[in-house]
Image (cartoon, rainbow, N blue to C red):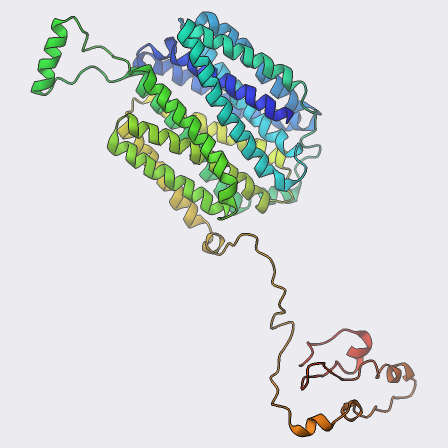
Length: 496
């Protein structure tokens, strides 16, 4: 619960930062003028995930409270950056500050993924705990957008940055109350490495990484699309040319770089928040009905069709659908991956393994965001790219997985209490004759064989091993004979 409070205030503060950027110079200058800066800072954000995380991560895992100190440090650092943003919303200093905050935000996500497995009572509670944290993040993000949006309308983006700073201060104070734990006291064991290198885990990790990379791609695709608008007015047709001439006569710039309305970006942002909320809400229920493999394939399929819709529409509605789909499916896919790792690698240290996987997923996010930051893309071209990537992920995952793993699963599968054919051999009997009823137990008992010399114990055990008549009339059970009766080790099932 203490970590959940930290996560809630941190998510709300991150949403307030998004509102700050929406009304600042970050979204007011030409996209072509800022692509170089954005690409440079994205390259800088790759360094912690490509170099620092593999080296420092194991050390932090073995230190008591190491991940807790990372959570505290990232919350405090984001508060400092939010304070600097208050005075830099109209300057180019906002760019390095925004991307430093991005690095801290992704580092917090890695630390959070490492400590959650140590804070639940049982491994079975891990997926539900991650689901609740995702729900909290989505609700808090929407609340942060609403509160910061109101203050931004009152006093501009500086006010929303101040709201974010206050939220990060509260987050830092609450982070000190979380428990100092050791994520992984022992180095990686051989069995753990083998389980995490299983084909099931690796294929799911690759599919989840592609899904996370699409999240970064769509985020920056829509950001550049709605922060720069269209490149001037198309005057190739007669009607638009006449309209352009009328606008020029009224001193309206039609050849510049008109920005899209701010509410367009707000609609896309809200759709992403609602999508994350829906994805985290339905994931546990979906997991009870279908296996993790189908959850991942279904999530990628939804993204594929949403990308096709965005490609053919090419407008705000297509962007909204794509934003909702990518956010909801990323939340569902991540929870499916967590559950699959629990199932396929029961001997793994989940804190250590999830932190490593999360670092790879965040690296995939940065790589996906780098593409639209460097290459000018619109919704149509970007939608085609998302459809191709998600389709490739579906095909490679389905072909790589054994077919029976996704087709023969049943929820709550238990072993049948009925004996199998190997356990009991049933031999049909003929209908008992009338003479059978005249026999008694003594008639059915065969004569006791003569025991060899020195085997009086064997002779005394014959009574216990003698044949019996079942309570069901006409069913004769032949007991084991010889030394099997003495030792109790039956060489075969009884014949009924």
